[in-house]
Image (cartoon, rainbow, N blue to C red):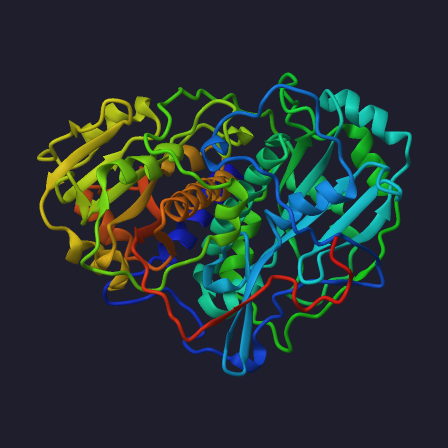
Length: 543
């Protein structure tokens, strides 16, 4: 079964690679009349409006990547839950150009298509019963899908070591495949990684701690969220991705990364309310996505231990609040090709991408780091242009040196950060060509290709195909916020030529694969666009 699943993943991954002579299969055109609705509702479910707040938590950005502080737990109420969701999965703004208007969200998404949905399991509080909820980001409300018995919560708190709640993510593949065809499965999982990091940051803003329950299986999560009893419209179902426990007391001991048996049994016995709204007139069935989604389904497992080493703090202080940076995150469309950044800024942006114990976002304890950053350095003052590698897990270094091109320098260039110069010289054209000829990859200050330890993870645990993409998405979220904090911008790039990246490094097998590209620089703003407040369309009173 595992061997068959691995072969299905490899077949999908190879078929969805872009090549210089051929792109991965998609519709080949934009069927605008059939574009899926980016907002999911559960019609008939009771709605609980969340207050729209004017004040955010005042955590400084410099503390965002530090473990939570000791002190009394911040309690859960409607206001804090509203803030947590608004600063992770909520809307960040609306853009308007002429008669066209579209929303942006705190968590980025490939093509702004947003396949990721948010669900919560909440205790009896805030004037409502405990239960299972869907978060509707368009109107910033909770939709109650099921009640849960009050007697369940003492068992929950005993299992997890204190008060808290569950938050889960799911994916609607059709939202991405409408535009990107077969390759969309990759993008959906990158988006889930961005969303997981956004949730981790939002928990840190409230001095809570978010832990990914990596022992949970997909079937468990489906039962918990009522997916197995929901009447989905064809090809518009939600697939479970992950579930996390949010500890209100952030400095308690280790959280068991599993779902208690009593919770799953209670959810199985409850009726679920609400009918999912139809998203599109004629969803298209991409059978390759159906096949790979089945191959990477996760069973219940024992959680993996993590081995994270501390790294130095960012060398440049940022005099901004974390919430301000999070709200202002945007994707750049074009960069100034003549503008550069300092080496200190470069190191400050890269530093939080290396996982540290207890620190967001990698402190969610998903899995040991398996992704390294290949850096195309173009315009960094004080750092020679060239090809660099940030080794995010140092015990991988000997095999990287043994397996990649023999003429690479492997010269360490920073005392605290495991950053190595591989090859000096102008790599702007290489960066553009490898990222589907996109100029932003070469006109930026630097570009990134994320290389994941592929074969060794997937042969024995096929579901880690999703996890590797999540890790890349989490790294992307760190880079987005780091760029924004230092007055520049980032852009995620899902279109790249997979195997030409590998050949550039001397990779001739599947031990490492490129899964995500990214680029950072000085943005050129489009002043024709008008920006509107995220919830300007709602009439309810602001608190």
